[in-house]
Image (tube, rainbow, N blue to C red):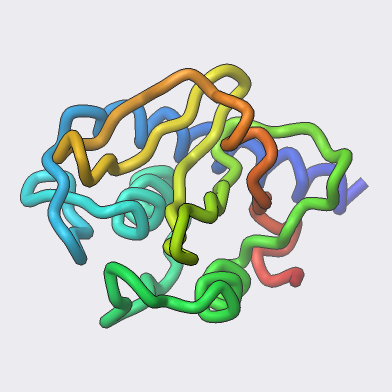
Length: 150
């Protein structure tokens, strides 16, 4: 019973994070940006959305725009209280997706049932786009039931 309540609470926080990210659509893109008012990158968007939803997690500091290893990204997500979802699990609003781009560059976004919200460097702003196959297939993380489960 307690675990079910904790899972419901985490799902609600994640849904609020997705709604918060949606409110940040249009914010300008800024490398290392972590404030919607001054600009966001993909890491800053995820952490700002969860903070706006009432979930505080320490944002990774001094990460490179390119060349950050997948292991370091996964460790940062786990440190934030997110756990990787296994292959067949349903996508929940507020899940964090890790997209692998060419040349081993990585990109984070918040996914929902039909769309993804991410900081688009090329468009220089936070955007909401249809949830295409690449985002659906990307590894994704849910908030853990206790916020610390790995």
